[in-house]
Length: 314
Ligand SMILES: NC(=O)c1ccc[n+]([C@@H]2O[C@H](COP(=O)([O-])OP(=O)(O)OC[C@H]3O[C@@H](n4cnc5c(N)ncnc54)[C@H](OP(=O)(O)O)[C@@H]3O)[C@@H](O)[C@H]2O)c1
Image 1: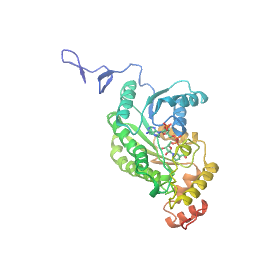
Image 2: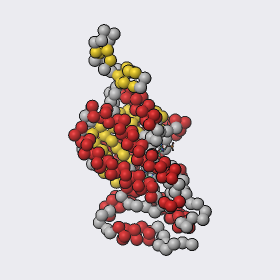
Image 3: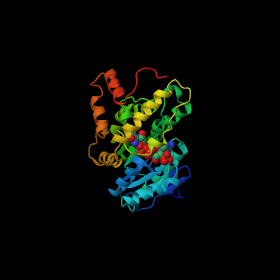
Image 4: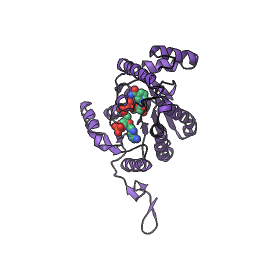
């Protein structure tokens, strides 16, 4: 609450409290539905920003490196989107960056926000025993703690307005362990367990928590993921075999990320969203099989599908 010099509270000025004091909000703000998306420089985040803007959303497209904004600008141009997207710097592993992006967004919207899409994500490939501690923590900081920190920053707004959708781009890796992908799987299982639990707490406030679980999609994640294969590792040959099989699987199965964007838009716009959306045939099949087949059998089928050896490889 702000006051006149006389001490009388001023109620009609829209604005928000920031670390630098009170900031007034322009009166034209907040007419459209608004969403903040993380990791919009490439891939699913980029496709989602373009898709939601084209559907009339006011999109706060965030990325950790604003130098990459031209990638999103190009995608928006190709999608015929001329306005509705505002870009903000946001690194989900940096609390100060989260605070600043949230403050800046709420300042522009008049302290309102309809939804957040937690999309930013990273992976690290390799046998668990070979993965450096820094890699384990980088993946958990981004895919798990980043989601928690940003959610915490937005919950006061969602609670006060008694409305809000928290969409988390998880993965089919959240319900099936994948060889050489242990820390990524762990991060997505962790975020799903957390999401299932907080859904109870947030429902009374009218806040929906929604999981999007894509199978393989053609994005930058395949190229940007470090492949940890130290020479002399007892896993070296096996990891190489898995990565080769994984590349062949992705080349054959990976689909257009705009498909995921369509599902995210549905989850944001439908009156009663489901909690979980497996996306793509592979994710839907694996989701269906989970819990129906014994885990050992599923592992055997995956091992055969990837053409992997079940014995140590010299
Ligand atoms: N592609 C798939 O097959 C697939 C399948 C299932 C789930 N997913 C999930 O989909 C989401 C999007 O991934 P993608 O496939 O679209 O891969 P992508 O093209 O690599 O996009 C990942 C995005 O996350 C951003 N990012 C990484 N670390 C960040 C950080 N600390 N702060 C803010 N942004 C950060 C990246 O930014 P930079 O450009 O700066 O690196 C990039 O914009 C991820 O959560 C991923 O786990 C993908």
